[in-house]
Length: 42
Image 1 (cartoon, rainbow, N blue to C red):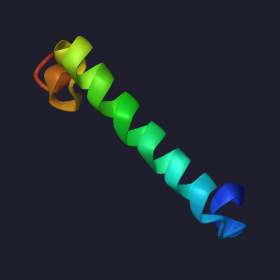
Image 2: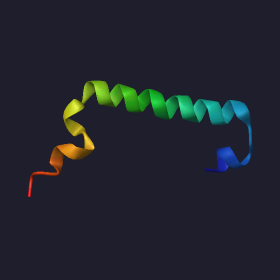
Image 3: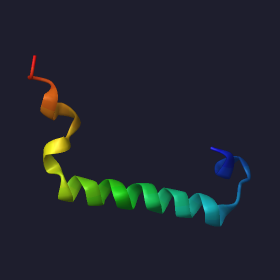
């Protein structure tokens, strides 16, 4: 949050690219860890 408060475009872009990239990476590598996967376990 502090990175975005500095309004530095390069730092904000790096954070966004990192978040999106790792989200895609973990979604591809671990598809069984989706949010809805454990909804019917009760």
